Length: 121
Image 1 (tube, rainbow, N blue to C red):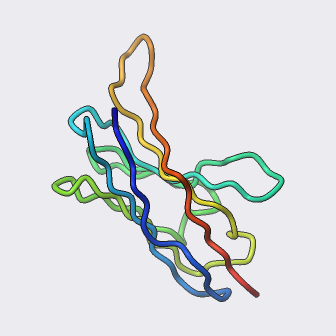
Image 2: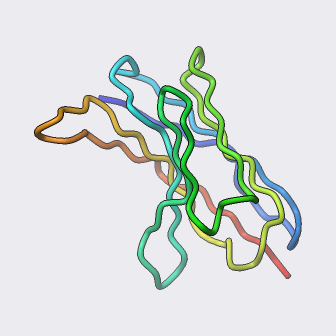
């Protein structure tokens, strides 16, 4: 099992920056990717960005060009630098991990508890 601990979040004005970090522990040798999802009130949870353990990133359209995801493999820690934040980025952000992946059955997933990001106009 992989456990996740989130750091960062908080409140910032529009145009500001925040960094979210997520530290993985447990069965980290089986990690496939780490990423962030967010849930805006009244909407479904959506993928923001993820990075594979080979350091290949993926960004959603809303994150592309504003967010940067990075991985410190030695510390099993992933960070998301968020710049040019907008009020519509206000959400609870959840760290997620895919691990112990199998070609036939897929991956196991772990989730963090979530951290609030609030962007005021």
